Image 1 (cartoon, rainbow, N blue to C red):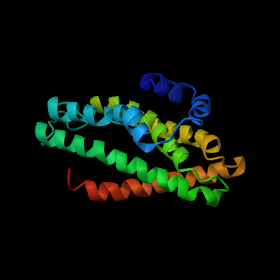
Image 2 (image 1 turned 45 degrees about the vertical axis):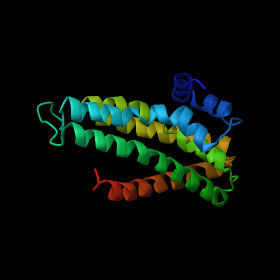
Image 3 (image 1 turned 120 degrees about the vertical axis):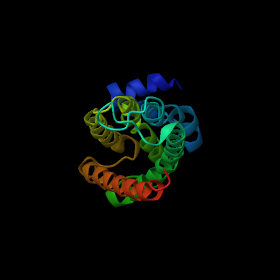
Length: 189
């Protein structure tokens, strides 16, 4: 799989991309190694460059980050590896919620949904380099939710009238998961 080509497809034509993705393998290891490993590195690498190398900590460029290079590197590595645990947990949640919304349980398709719908967020990680571009990352998050919503009926076979509530339930679970993970990982980094 060409990572850049797949990322471009997910961003520019997500509905068509989901139809191409649907018959593919959803093995977590393959998805993590062949796709997520590359794109999930963008936000922590850019955050490391911003904080650890350039020393930009705040919204203004002249506020240095107090942690330094090693603190930023450690934080980036932890966030990178936590990403994979969160992806796996989201796939389990997506699959577990499926019967509640008349969708088919399919762990492999749930994994594909969790991984590929993160593409806009990972690519928007480049905005971490420039302070003050948080709004663009928020827009990428909203677009990722839209991409996810488009993939639900294709991969999880959710009925059209249940896709919205299913997507909303998954988003709420993702928010709760992110709060829990932040509470656990936040004090470490």
